[in-house]
Image 1 (cartoon, each protein chain N blue to C red):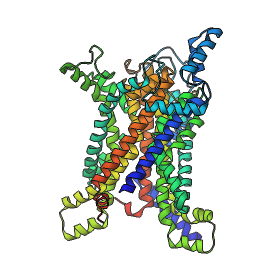
Image 2: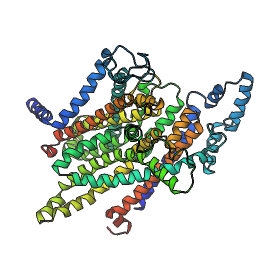
Image 3: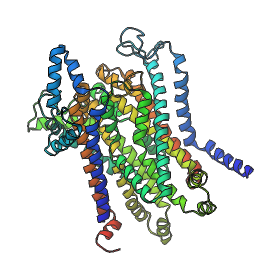
Image 4: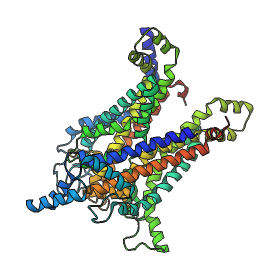
Length: 287
Length: 329
C-alpha cells in the first residue's frame, strides 16, 4: 500500500515536472514571492518615506523611479507585493474553506439543509460582491489588510461551494462510500476520509482560482480608495497614480509596475491551474 | 418550467429584500455616525452644532424608533425616494443616479454583448487548432488576468496621451453642451471608445478561453465521436459542439455579472466617465452616504434584472427547457 502510494506520487511529480504550463506558471509566481520576501532588503526606504526631490524617471539609483512626492516606487512595489500575497492567501483561503464546508455539507447531507444552503449560495452568487464590500468599507474609518481579506473571502465562496457540492453529490453514491456508510462510519469521517481525498486535486484548483480572484478584488477595492487605510498595496499605488495625475504627466513608471505584477501573478496562477489540471487529469495530458 | 422561473424569481426577491435591509442596516450599525461626521467637517461651534445635529437627525428620520425607520425606508423606496444627496444638496439621489444610468447602459450593454459574441466565436475557432491555441490561449489568459482599471489606464495613456488619438476623460468634450447634433454625437462616441475597448478586451479573453475549453470538451463527447464515425463533415460536428457549448457560456455570463459590474465601476473611474461608478467615487470622496446607498441599490436592481433576462434567454435557447414548457417530454 505504501509503495503504491509513493509510486502514485512520483507519477504526479513526473508529469508535473514535464508540464510546461505548470513550469512557467509556478516560476513566475515563485519569482514574485521571492521578490516580495527579499524586497525590503533591496531598498533603503519604507513605502511612504520621502527619498528624493520630485518625480524621477527610473534610474540606477531608483529602479522604478519616484512618485511626485519623491517616494521610491520600487519600495512601494515590493511592499505592495507582500500585501497582494497576504490578501490572496487569506482571502482565497477563507473563500475556499467556506466553499468546501458549504459544498460538503450541502452535497453530502442533501435534503432541507441542502435547499437552504443552496438558496444562500444563489443569493450571494447574484449579489455583486464588490459593491457590498464597497458600501461596508465606505463606513469604516479604519480598515486593515486582514479585515479586507476576510471580507473578500466571505463573498467569494459561492461558485466554489456550488462546484464542490456537485462533485460531492456524485461521489456520495459511489460504492466505496456506501460501504463506509454500511460499516457505520460517521458522516463527518466519511466526508473527510472517503470523499475529500478523491477531490484533493480539484480543491487545489479551486484554491488557486480563489487566490487569483481575491487578488483582483483587493486591487479593485484599493483602486477605488477603500483598501486598507494603513500601508501600501498595488491597487493603492494605481489609485495614487491616477489621483495625482501620473497619466497627464506621463509618469508611466508609477502605474505600469503594479498592474503588470498583478496581471503576471494572476495570469501565471491561471496557467498553473491549466497545467495542474493536465497533470491530474490523464485525459488532458500530452496535447 | 413554471417551477424554474418561480424558483429564480424567489431568489431574486429574497436577494432584493436582503440588499435593501443591508442598505438600511449598514449606516445605522456601523461604528461612527455619518451625521456627526458631516457636522464635524462643517466645523461649527458647539452650540450651533447641537442644533444642526438634531435638525439633521429629524430631516433624515433618525429620531423615530428603529422598526419605524425600517418601515419608512421601504415605503420611501416604493415612492421612488432614495433620499437627498449631501454632495449636490438639495438634489434628490434618484435624479442624480438616473442622470448617470444612461451612460452605464451605453457603455456596458455593447461591451458585454459584443465581447460575449466575439469571444465565443473566436474561442470556438481557436479550439483544436495548434497554432491558434499556442498564440491566442496565453493572450486570453493575460487579458482575463488583467485588472480592469490597469488596462484602462494603459489605453488612456497610450491612445490619450502618447498618440493623442482618443480623448480619455469625460463622456463628451468639455467645450460642448449636450444637444442633438453630429458634432456632439461624434464627441460622445470618441469619449466612449476607450472605456468600451478596455472593458471589451478583458471580457473577450475570458469568453474565448471558456469557449475553447468547452468546445474541446464537447468534441470529446460520445455524440461527436459518433458523428465522426458516421463520416459527418468536421464543420457539422463543430456546429453541434458550438451549440452545446454555448449553454454553459450563457450561465457563465450570469455568474460573471458581478465581476463585470466591478470592472465597469473602476473603468469609469479611470476615464472619469460619468456613470454610476464615477458617481460612487464622488460619493465616497464627498462623504455622501445617501448617494452611495442609492448607487448600491441601483446596481443590485440592475444586476437582478440582467440575471432574469439571462434566465429568459436560457429558456429560449435551450430546446430541452422549452420542450418541458410546452408540456411535451
